[in-house]
Image 1 (tube, rainbow, N blue to C red):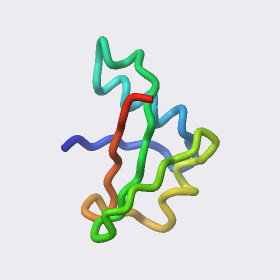
Image 2 (cartoon, rainbow, N blue to C red; image 1 turned 90 degrees about the vertical axis):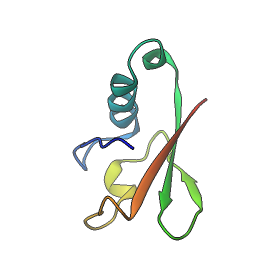
Image 3 (cartoon, helix red, strand yellow; image 1 turned 60 degrees about the vertical axis):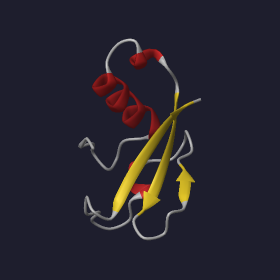
Image 4 (cartoon, helix red, strand yellow; image 1 turned 45 degrees about the vertical axis):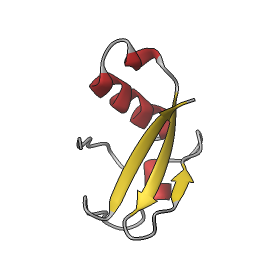
Length: 73
């Protein structure tokens, strides 16, 4: 598990870039599908390319409550 901190006013592309940077080469050039999972629900919700982080995480998210899964597009 890894942790990435990003400003709530940022959007999909900034989150994607932060994740790609963490993954490093050669994965940093692969477009990503980002999904949010709220702990306990087991349901993935795909983050849209025009979504802002604040639209997905309402309130103050705690690390144990939210998880992001990433897939190649």
